[in-house]
Image (cartoon, rainbow, N blue to C red; front, top):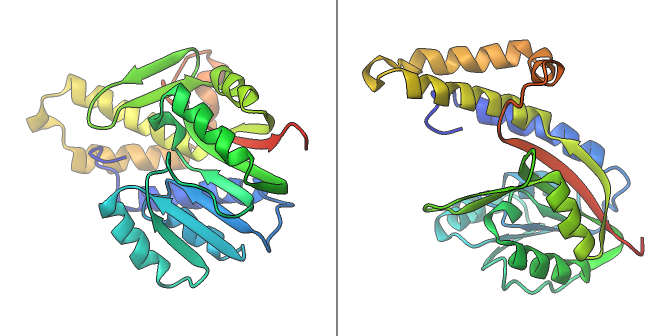
Length: 245
């Protein structure tokens, strides 16, 4: 949500709203177990898991993000921060929950399959993998740049999960993410139409954000009701379990 003029509270709003979904999806997961948060960034989710589970292993590959993760983890003795490449990380325990919060979209399909195949073996009986991934409505869209990204459809993710011996127990659109994405895409259109000197993002950004907030949940439902593919980018939670389970 950077560079759209949204207030700082926009990120906190989305995290709190997504957290309510996550806790609902995690009902029944063993609170005495260990959580693996792979590609955890600065550790927002790791800290949240530490408040509800016995142990958290938080793995991050970026040195800059890892410093923030270490600082955040200092307040939680049950978090073990690990600096390392997620693709070469070797699980050293069995986990009740493996959380992939926007990781798979930065990996090509071969790496996704190799990673998930390795993680499946480290799930404890009854454990789950929870993915939170940005999605498109059909096919696959790849973007190059400083951070190459692959946006896949739900159908493609389901196919990949099956190849790894995983069953999708539950899939759910991440409505808070989609709501904020609608605002981002509207701002992008505004920036494309209006000269930079007249964009007034300090006004348009907060106004767009609060229209999204106050119009929720009706704004989220409107594109579907009108059969309009908006926003272009969505986000979904996938609750995965082994086929044996």
